[in-house]
Length: 133
Length: 133
Image 1 (cartoon, rainbow over the protein chains, first blue to last red):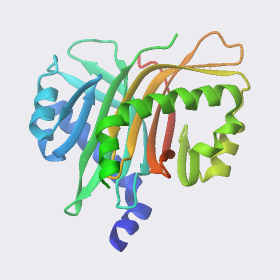
Image 2: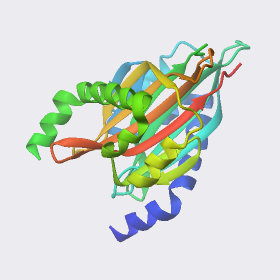
Image 3: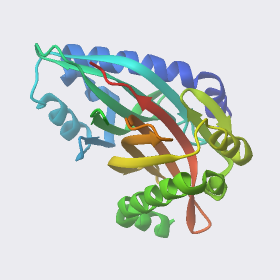
Image 4: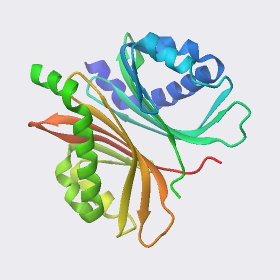
């Protein structure tokens, strides 16, 4: 418990940053490799469609109708999410798919939970953000 | 504990919806009245600026440089955030301030934590989302 509390105080912004870099690098090169980041109780809501558990979530990501994809992170926020060392990570940015020249805006919220001296994604919510005007 | 778990299973989407309606109705009419929704350990990150605790958070919101404001919710996602009945709420939408005709896109993530048969906002992260293209 003391260790977890120390982690929350010291490291959550760095952990969030490292996670986001690793997550999108992996997503954009071979998203089937994201499986180790999820667990059996992980939840994904992707454009309102819910998935739960490693296999279901990774299948959902692999089945998305594009091959080439690039995430460009514009903003990254992080906050401690509970007293056990969880971390909320909120990203906004641009998504480029295939040969499409015009990027789309998106926002993605993760909750990372500590597990075995590392973290896994417990919550994952993805939304495209359309221009308001 | 059984009650909390039942809540998570049954109610989190409805609670999220009711919370969002109440939150923005209150924000847009008199945002100083949001104080009861926060607690001493609540965190707000508003456009990267952090605040903690009821008084500091509400002062930050009250001091925002606009009087007339209107939030229009476009998407609302919710997921259970822990086994104690926490709820993640992710909103995207449009923000209109003063007499400005062109809305701005925004995204806001809340984590609601159960307390005394109700909920309070433990995490609150707000970001404007600029068009990617």
